[in-house]
Length: 158
Image (cartoon, rainbow, N blue to C red; front, side, top):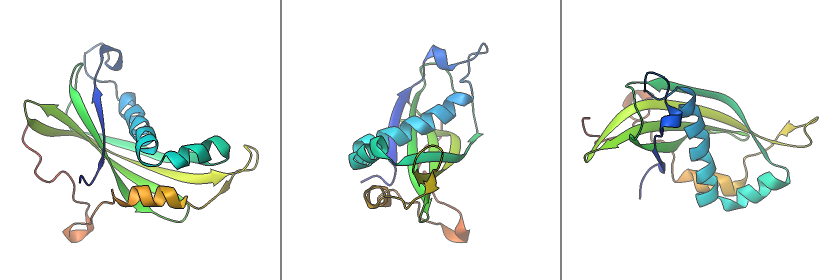
């Protein structure tokens, strides 16, 4: 069993700029898409809760870029649970280019969301649903020596 949830993506021309590399905003879009597919695949009960009253507010989103990617690069966006409080979830994302049997870490991102309930004029923090906690628990980041997260062990050179 993998220690991350994986969303596969094939980069298209519409995601590149005039120079031919991927426009930075797409990395943020892929984080959101990975999170959505996780809910669909691993926590469908939460989707029903979202249709009802649960709101997932993105509080923070970031990405660090290591190398450029271009159209038709195949990516594996790998999501892990970085931390979990009563009302908030921290995700870690690794963007890995898959090419010729090798994996290359091309970017790393993070995202923090808050669970909220109530009408749009009066939303309030709420506990992370138990079903979501259970689904996320399989993908928790294991702390490495020195308190840093340890990810992508055994990734090949690109």
